[in-house]
Image (tube, rainbow, N blue to C red; front, side, top):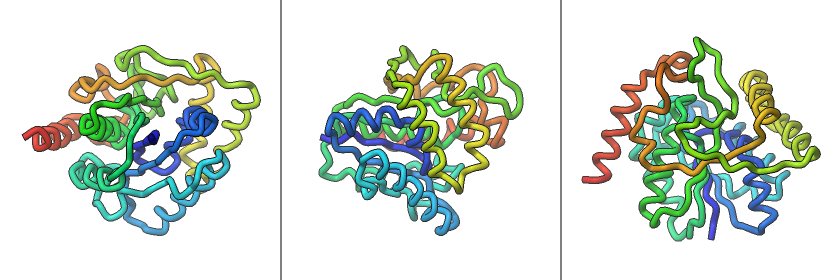
Length: 249
C-alpha cells in the first residue's frame, strides 16, 4: 500500500514534511506526483532536483518524485486549463499502485493550481473506493486585502484539524530544510516566516477533504489568487465544472 501525494509544484511537499517523516518512520511506501508543467525545461529539471534532495534527506527514495505534468500542457499557474491531461497522467503513474491514503494541497483559494490538486485527488480517490484524502494548507487570504495572506492556516470551512506534534528538534530541522530550494528563494522569503508564525501559534495540522468542498467557493470574499494572480474564481470554477461533468457523463 502506498501513500500518494498529489502536488502542483516541486517544493509543495515541504509543507507536508511531518506527514512524510511519519510515513518514513512507519515504513510506508510513498509516491509524490507533481502536476504542473513548466515552459522552461531547465526550470523543471532544477526544481525536480531540489525536491529529490529533500526527499533523500528525509529517507525517501528520490525516484519516487514523479513529474507527471511534464508534457501535459498543465502549465504552472494554469493547471485548471488542462485538467483532463493532468488527470490522465496521474492515472497512468498510478497504474498498479494500491493507494492507502492521498495527501494534497487544501481547497483554500490561495493558488489555483493547489486547489486543482484537491479536485484531482477527489477524482483519483473516487476511482479507488475513496481512501482517505488529507490536505495541507499552504496559504490563503480571507478577510485580507491585496497581496497579504495567511501562511499554513487551515480554513474552518475545510473541517476539523488533526494536529501532528513535532519536537523542538523536529521544528528546527524542518525550518532549516528550506535551504534545499535555492531556485525558490524569493517565494520562501515571504512564505516561510508566515508559515512558521502560524505553526508557532497553532502547530501543524491536516484536514480530511470532504469531496463536496470542491463544488464550493473556498471561502467568502475575494480569493488570494484572484488578487495576486488576477485569475477569477469564475474562470477556475467553469474549468473545474467542465472537467467534472465530462468525467461523470
